[in-house]
Length: 450
Ligand SMILES: *[C@@H]1O[C@H](CO)[C@@H](O)[C@H](O)[C@H]1NC(C)=O
Ligand SMILES: *[C@@H]1O[C@H](CO)[C@@H](O)[C@H](O)[C@H]1NC(C)=O
Ligand SMILES: *[C@@H]1O[C@H](CO)[C@@H](O)[C@H](O)[C@H]1NC(C)=O
Image (cartoon, rainbow, N blue to C red; front, side, top):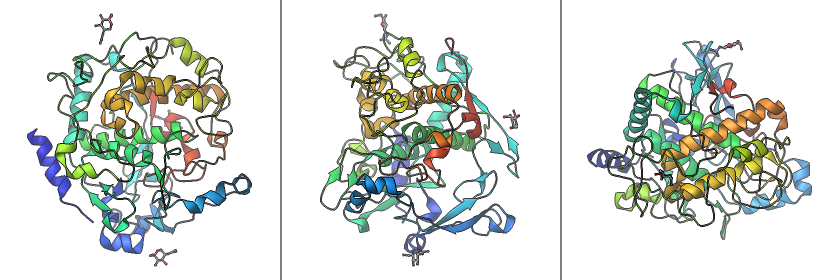
């Protein structure tokens, strides 16, 4: 509790959102410039050849989208995240070679060393494969991430989103920056008169697997930097065939009571969800400023009437039978689409029937915080679940030789192949996340036969 108050006090010292802190000064915002100095003092480390400060090339809407009527609908949106990060910045760093980070001061994922010339691959393992000591270490690291203020990033908060002058950038802890990124990408898209809830930047479209992949890589890297443990890898939860949530015990992720409250003696009992409590579409995480509105984590596995089990071994086998990454209309109605089966809007066995399956099924099955899309990333269970979803994505990439050319043009805002994944810095094109995980510095263990 004391710890929580401490970081909330820090939260209140608003600096003038995952926004690199140094790019949120009044000056950077008014210049629309995010080209911070690298280690050598020059913007984007340009003097040492690490990168350059580049004028933003805005996303070009392609002719097929104009023909489909999408382009005509774009100007109706008045959303700060559209064509990321154009609303905030028209100049950002472009890093060369293996350099990475918003100021090219870090290495891109999967590389390390002073010249970023040494590659590495960490191995993500099933949480039940870890020894007790290893598991305790993971829990300890997650807690450090939950309580340590991020020095590099701040988050965006406001009440009425129509009033841009009230947008504020505030401090957050590293885990909370991660939870906020998911929240921010998920909030409804703003039009001048209303909010469009049928599209999001992270779901219901081809960006879904890559968007979550990048979020996990972000958290993993931040924990490596924070703890100095370069070998740290996130764990996953292979839920295939479980009758109930076998890791919902105090030895693992914590058990809960009938109301969904986590057992006081469990690891994450004291965690609170940022951006929870008030879930207005017209606001961006206003609750960061009001501790009393932040909810504790809640979980109610197996109590939702619509979903009575976790996905089966056969469901995963069936999901991997769909060889086409995604299909028109590239949203939650797409049929015979690997992405839409994995995301869980249709039945894996026939790829046609609308149903709550796979990814969605696990969220609904676990319920509570995990059952509410915008705030679900507050529960570390989200990390374990999404690592397993990402493992299935990786199995698909290996089986069908998935690569950036496999990523389709589509009509979903922010999900174009050469649009930046929203709201990450530096820019990652959506299509570039469709490649082998070793390119991003990690791989998965084999567990239960695959
Ligand atoms: C970037 O935005 C700033 C502030 O609005 C403006 O002065 C500048 O001309 C813009 N630069 C480009 C290349 O569009
Ligand atoms: C580093 O990259 C080389 C060449 O791609 C590869 O053969 C090697 O296995 C990689 N090493 C690690 C630790 O990933
Ligand atoms: C799962 O179900 C079994 C059998 O009903 C029960 O013994 C076990 O306690 C349950 N586990 C959890 C975590 O609910």
